[in-house]
Image 1 (cartoon, one colour):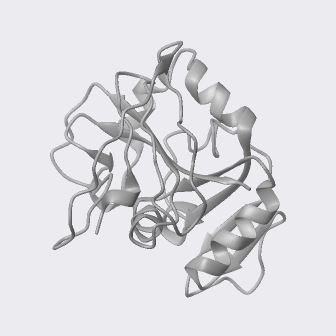
Image 2 (image 1 turned 30 degrees about the vertical axis):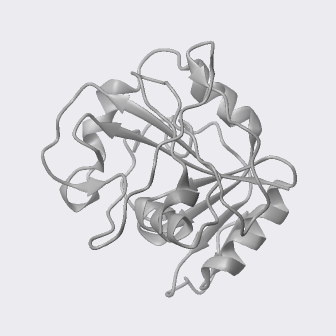
Length: 202
């Protein structure tokens, strides 16, 4: 079974995009090697993205690094949207229902990772208790405004569940079956991060 993982790079005050979805703030923080991201890329079998993320800004726009994982990812993408384009690009599938989108991405990923991109689709996965892991990289900057890592007004807390570290990253613990309490992890990338237990949200 595929592992559903939400990955993002966030500012120290918890934003993954600036106002209006601006991603230019991230560009200076992408230079240099990132072994944790490289390990993740090697496991990703499909991407599940929200419509805003899929059609939005890119910190590497206009360069050879444009696209997921600095342009290195070349695999299936499932986009959760209620307004699909008339024609999907090669390798892209549009889905209007969360569970259907997760099923499509999971089938494409096989035993690998479905990388969830976008705060809104990640929130939906958490609230539906479909998310297994969270891999969060922290960049040394304060944005002050923008799109939060997790924004659920009126929602309840999601407890953090740190796992053992290896090579500076937190290793995921065994993941229960879907529909049962699911774990999610934070890992250490640009600067220290942590791991979430999505199952403990009510």
